[in-house]
Length: 126
Image (cartoon, rainbow, N blue to C red; front, side, top):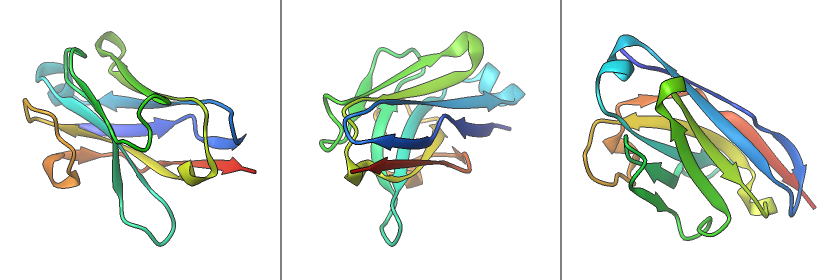
């Protein structure tokens, strides 16, 4: 099946930037077309949708809270999905998760995703 591992999290000051990576492995991921999403969960809060990208990369979608600041992209040759985060705010502090979905259309609900990584911590100070 599919295994997902996030990396690139850390501590950054407000207004700074961070680039998250999600490395996918497994024969299933290499064979089938998976859309990919990023979610985040702050302490004591529910997990929220952040961004989505289709297998080809031609379709993307963002939560209103990150639109214009975050950019999702993917490199299928490297089996990797990225989340470029600019103009970071303290409210962006959360554990960020990547996930894979077999749906054709834009997926914004966690229930629509088949596989999940274990998350990477992003902390924005000031």
